[in-house]
Image (cartoon, rainbow, N blue to C red; front, side):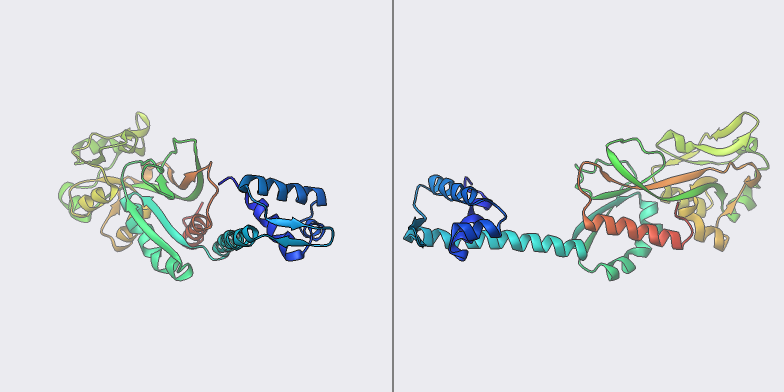
Length: 300
């Protein structure tokens, strides 16, 4: 479109106010500036919009037709801007959230009802992935990342920090006994992650130093799968507190080697791209998570 919004607005103000001088005053511009704007607009359109006399301005037939369209365009832009102002006050629109399945199931899902009650105009779209995704490729607004962040192009807000514990079910311990030291883990069935390898170094202090790298008998890509395997008595596992709190409270999983466990806290961040303006719906979602996690005593 060759014609600009400012040119259309200047034309409308001249018509409504009845003079170039009055329009210039309303738009905080000079009379000569408004006059040049009108001249430029007529040149672009190739028509005469206004007949100018010493006493008044009179719309031509073409000017009358253009005025109708110009009013509609300016009104549509003003309405769009007003909708954006409303959205800033009451966030609305689709919000695509991605998180690893354990965090999705144990932390996000229980909060969905309260979030939707507070923000009924936000349509949540929840996606689970146990691998790190490309936010743009997956059309994701905000992702929950657990552990060390690698992508410096992302903006991150810390949500919580969770201890890691070595756990087993009472059933497994009754059959195989409880390891007395980290060195005794070699005699047990250990459950590990397929990736990343860093998750298979458990936060244990042992004779060789800090951090015990396990040789897993069974691997899984998801922490939730490992949790279920541990609950079923398949071996020992090292998992974050955010997914095992209820299991430990009910006694379905029991911590082992507590005296050898290093005070490691796994970081959880909400991430989104730095080079985009943070939409109100993303901001309120992250703020809501921080508020709820703080109430649960797990926020940073």
